[in-house]
Length: 170
Image (cartoon, rainbow, N blue to C red; front, side):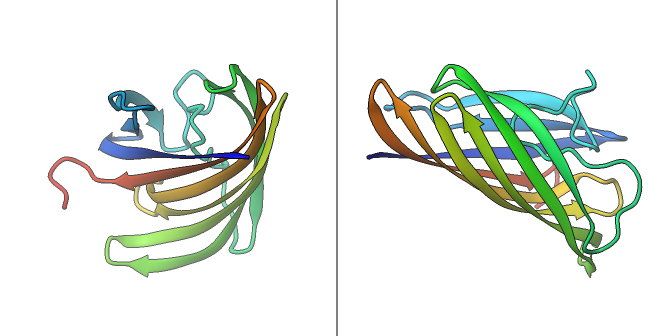
């Protein structure tokens, strides 16, 4: 099969109260320029229109969760490569709560699957949640997908990294 590797980076540019501005950079394909998109989310990963951001960002549960506890998130994402929807199912598990240099943080693991008309795959991710404001400090996920496009088989690997680097931080 043909192999495609794609990397997307997300930076939390600023946090104001319970809202954050994300800058999403997708590298240009075939020598094209990078595409940068800016969106706003709340500290649960929602855009404010009662929906998840739609870019693979984890949507946090309401209420408390004990270490070892988990929650599920089901979502549909538009796949620009295939021109179809991908149904994504993820389970998030709270692995630990610990004291870090920045304060209290929560370590969370993601395991998931995705399925579309001509694609299926798996998702493995980790994230660190800030205990002060509930926003993600760090998030990395690897999606591996097998798909068929115009009779050709492809193996696709997408790496998404989110790093919180607000203005004025190092």
